[in-house]
Amino acid sequence: MRILAIDYGERRLGIAAGDDSTRIAIPLTTVEAGRDAVTAVERLLAERPAGKIIVGLPVTLRGEIGPQARVVEEFVRKLSERVGLPVETRDERYTTSDAMQRLGPGHKPQARDAAAAAIILQDYFDSLPRKDEA
Image 1 (cartoon, rainbow, N blue to C red):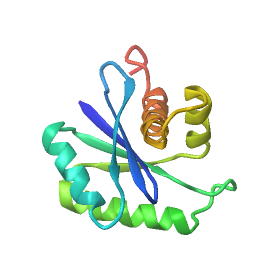
Image 2 (image 1 turned 90 degrees about the horizontal axis):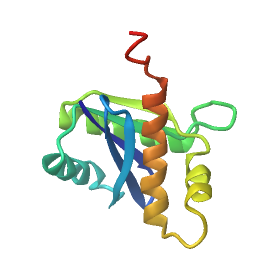
Image 3 (image 1 turned 60 degrees about the vertical axis):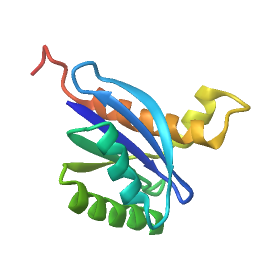
Image 4 (image 1 turned 30 degrees about the vertical axis):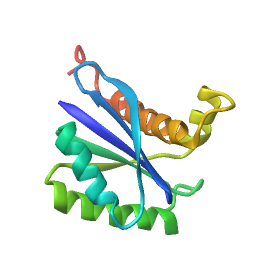
């Protein structure tokens, strides 16, 4: 099953995709955030169908739900209602800084955001039981 991952930001949503059979996350693109973010994701899903969506949840360093996480939870609620797919959240602490470190200097914010989404998705894949353990 193809899985889409989203790194939700105030300006952009970083998007990554992968398949649960290969368990490899690949950065794809970014879409503009704002009021039309759900519509933008719907358009992307029309081009690249998926069976599940993982959205990074920006919990605080103490693991608590803060104001930005509440914004993401509302986005997840709206997205889930509109696309009719399972939408899960995943702790995204340090994914942006990890993406910046992996990419190195000189990359555009769009590349960083898509890479952060890929890190979120790879973390999800890595948490799944191995096929020989299932």
